[in-house]
Length: 568
Image (cartoon, rainbow, N blue to C red; front, side, top):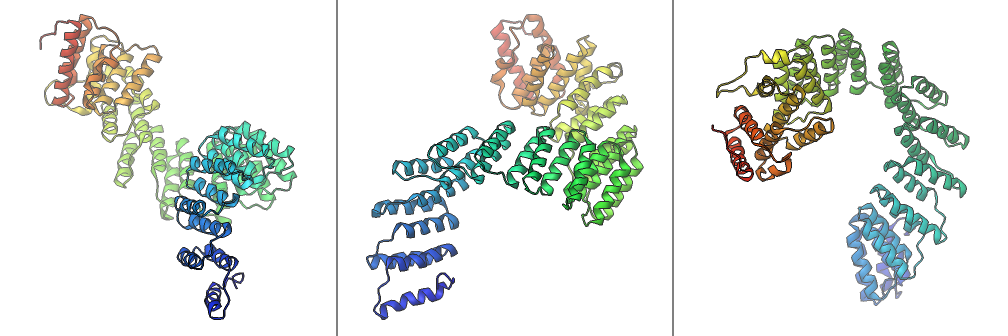
C-alpha cells in the first residue's frame, strides 16, 4: 500500500494489526515512516515514533534518516541536528546517509562550516564519505568564493578513491568561473577529459559564459565546436552568450554568423538573442538592419520591450537623429512600454549632441515628473554640455542639485567640472559673485573657484579645491578624500585650501578631531593666514554651526603650532 502511495489505508491496516493479534515490527513502521517522510507529514511521523517507544521498538538508522531528511526539507538543518543527537543518545549509530543529508542541508542554508564539521565527524566515526558527501561542500565553498578549499576537498575525495562525477566537476568549474578564474576552470575541464567524464550542457554553458566575459572569444568559439562534436546540443543561452560576447568585443561579423548558425540548427532565438543583435547593429550605426531585426523578432512572436526600444533610441540619438529617436519613443509608449532612466539618458545625450540644451533640460525635468530619479549619468551629460556652451552658472546649479539629491559624481563628472571651470575661467572671473550674507548657494562652486583664481592660484588646483569643498558641504567626505588622493597622484599637491575644505567635511560629519589625518605638513604662519582668509569666503556657504566648529579647530591648530591668529 505504501508503494502505491495509499498511506491512509496503510495507517488503517497498522491500527487493525493489534485487533487481529499481529504485532507490527520496526520494518512495518519504517515503511510507513518512509512514505510519510516523502510527504513531509512530520506530525504523523512523531505520533508513530511515540507508538514505537510505547511498544519498546527502538527506531533503526533508516527511520532516523527518514526523519532527518524530512526535517531538513520541511524545517531546518538545525532542527534535524537535534534528531542526530537523539540518535547518538539512543545508542543507534548514524550511517553515512545520515551525515550526507545533514551536510547537504547545511550547505543549502549557507552554513558550510557546520557542514564541514559534519564531514570530519563522519570520518572520525570511521564512516566512508562518498561523492554525495563531498559534492555539496565543493559547490557551497565555490559559491562563497573559497575555491582553494573546494579544490582541496576534491583532491581529498579522489584520494579516498572516489571518482568525481559530472556534478562534482560542474560545481568546481562553476565556482572557478564565478571567482573569475576561467583559465583554472578550463584546466579542471581537461582533468575531466583525462578521467573520461564528459562535460554536460550546463558545464559548457558556464565555461562559454566565463570566456565571453573575459573576452576570450576564440576559446569560447572552440568550446562551441567541441560541444557539437560531442553531440551536446547548445541551447539558445549558449548562442546568445557568444553573440553578446562578440558584439561587446566589436566583432559584429562573427556575432552575425553565430546568430545565423543558431537558426540553421533549428534553435529559435528568444527576445534576449534578438536584443543582442539589435544592440550590435545600433553599436555600428546600422540602424536599418536593427529595425529589420526588430521586425523579424515580431514575426516569430518575440515582443520588443523597453530594452529593445531604448537600444534603438540610443542608436539614433548617438547619430544626432533625434526625430527618429522620438518616433521610436512614441511607438514605445503606444505599446505601453514605459521609458526608463536609460531611455531618458539616451535622449538627453542626443539633444546635447545637437546643442539643443533647452530640450535636454526640459526632458530632464519631465523624467523626474514621471517619478524617475536623475542619476549620475544624467547630471554628467547635462553638466558637461553646459560647460561646453559656457553656461557656467547653469552647470554649477546642476552640480549643486546633484549633491543635494545625494548623487555622487563619478570620474567623468569630475573631469567635466575641472576642465569646465579652468576653460571657463575668464567668464567666471567676470561674474558678479555673492558677497553679502544672503548667498546663493547654487553658485558656491563658482564663488569659491573665482575667489581662488582671482588670487592667482593655480586654476586646476583651485577647481579641485572648489569641488572638494562642495562635496564636503554636502557631507560627501569620503568622496572628497578620494578626490584629494587622486589629486596628489596626478601631481597636484594638496595645499592649505585643500586642508580647509576637508576640515569643513570632517566638522560636518561630526569628526572634527580627525583634522590631523589631513594635515599635509606643519603649517607655516603664511599658510595659516591663507586658511583664515579663505575661511571668510567658505563661511558664506555653510551653516553657522559648521563655521564655528571649524573656527574652534583652527584655534587649536594655532595653539599647537604657536601661530599668531589673524584678526577677524
